[in-house]
Image 1 (cartoon, rainbow, N blue to C red):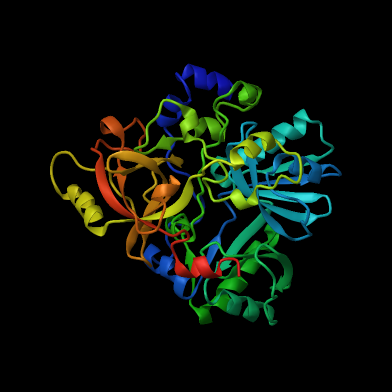
Image 2 (cartoon, rainbow, N blue to C red):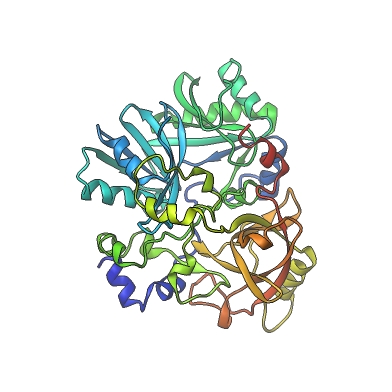
Length: 454
């Protein structure tokens, strides 16, 4: 069965996604906590952390004389400058200009690239590589959540982040850290192994992403941990990992805009029913029968500055038509502490309760969409929710109409699903509740706002 057939069998894409039995995106193999998630969160602001990203993302290597052409034909990004060892936030859109997904794209060689992230982008690239008969070779390395057997990958991937990250790198290598720009690459020698590095700041703090052949991973990890002892390095477990985006402001879960439209039908028929798009789950208080109401534009996600019309790509005409429109704005919503406490307090009463807030990430589906209101009128959506121990607040990443997106504006966040909840196993019977929220900057962390790309 293909995705298009599954949608029809399920009574439409919204019903299919809303009642999917899949929970939130998982972060396999890495243990839930190494110390406790509170200290692990604090460490990325105060000392240094290591994220082990070796397991939860799909890697796909694209190699061949037409590799760059394939990526250029699909990405909304400019490729005028893309040098060896550099990274790029690679974003692809549907024919109608709505986001299918975004990943990190690495240039490993003149004709060798690597896509790292959620697989909706990998699927779109694979489809066009086959349909367009590009002269490329695709080598896909699936994330551990969908693999069988030992969790062995082609490459390890570590993030060393935090105020002391540079000190850790300098101690490991015995050299000053390279002074390179955000998303520029370099090569280190760690534990006698050659290690590629990417200047990154995932937690909103300075640091590097380190990657190399799988066989070298354990030795490199041990060297990082040993060097980091002096500088307060914490290993970050799966519980804290997904909450770092609340402070850095990246929305990790746009709905792939593939579930409707005659121009996407062939693609839906190409996609399997049991793939990422077919198994994805939709949750939250925002309800619409129109799947298109869940689609997002690059501007919704804060990627408007990345859209470049200096080349032809899928969705270009649609995005050109959108570019002059009024665009929604990405914001952080700081939920009112008293209202959150009241909501959590329903756990200590018999009878009907509000939807449970998990900690530190309260996301309970792969595609979270909650309703945001002002005086009872919907003014936007929330796409990610959780708790920051650093800020002492429950935060969400929202997308609001521009007239309500000014920092300091009070809005209302609607928590919980209609009618007592969907059939997802992560959803208990509950009632919706409304929580006051203050529109705040994104990234929420002051350091992230000021230093992220410096």
